[in-house]
Amino acid sequence: MAVTGDETESAATGDIPAYQLRSPSSGLPQGIVMAASPGSMQSPSSQHAEEITRKREVRLMKNREAARECRRKKKEYVKCLENRVAVLENQNKTLIEELKALKDIYCHKAE
DNA sequence: CAATCGGAGCGTCATCGCCT
DNA sequence: AGGCGATGACGCTCCGATTG
Image (tube, rainbow, N blue to C red):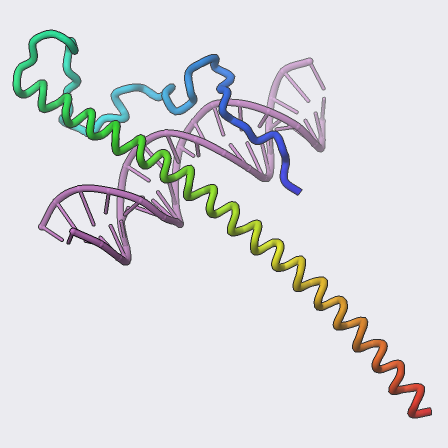
């Protein structure tokens, strides 16, 4: 059976999730410059950059959740298949027993 | 007891297929 | 054509088990 210590919610690094430990620059598409000081007056170009960043964050968040859901469904599917295997194996066993019993009966009649 | 291994889960990227 | 959700692939972390 599977190991059952599978909750990875709490990172051992304290309160920072593992996926945020990467170098921050690596997550950004090339050519994107982070806005220097949010909250102050912004040039149109930095507003645009912020919009792009925001869109990216939304996309990443949606995909993160989609991936989680996808894995959940896959696990469920595999569990279903495993159940089906167990049922079919039982059926097979029963049928083999039945066949053996019938053969026995047939043999004794033939004697 | 520290090192190593293997499995599980996660986030992200790339890609595909569907919908508008 | 472009947006979007689903999913495979990859690399990473964490954790329990095993081993020397």
